[in-house]
Length: 229
Image (cartoon, rainbow, N blue to C red; front, top):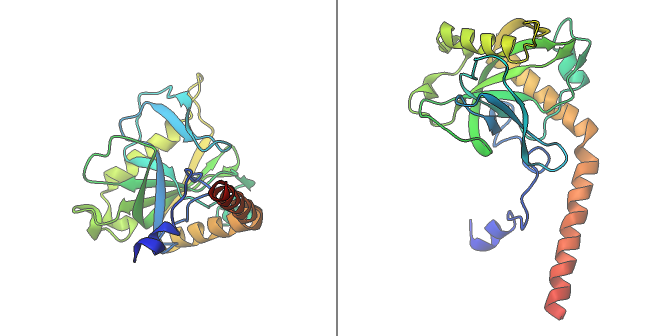
């Protein structure tokens, strides 16, 4: 790739982490993850949907910390297709698809992007809403690169993930309204990721891309006007 080809991929502004980045190099099994929370965080951070900046959602009430990196897959959305894959859910949660990424080396900061390989997921219903948690491993990880399906992970790691998501929304009455209904392997995880990408396209795709193209044209017009001036 020459410098001219590289410049075609350059943005003079930061793309929105949810809308401005592709889901990954080869979805649904090779996906990009935007990391919001690390295993060291006792505060729940999340991307502000309007601005794209990372904001504080809430301090965690319990002492549980996420056992792995936690974020979402860009240009995904949990709507009707995702709901249909979760028996008992009344609707989907209307958020990007969550992803947990396992890394042998400590990654101590959020607000980063990484490439990962999907190996399974946790099926969860939160207040009647489908709220799947995709499980993936960091691409080219020296320890976890041999894991290709959820069955390749230690049982205790799955238990820790289940415990965290069972308690991370716990209120003062020590209830959370979260029900973990199943864990699943790579094949079903691929269906969930595909459904979330298709849900995103239905809800945001054409209009979002049209807005991006308008911004690009406005930027180009501004550059050309400055050149003529």
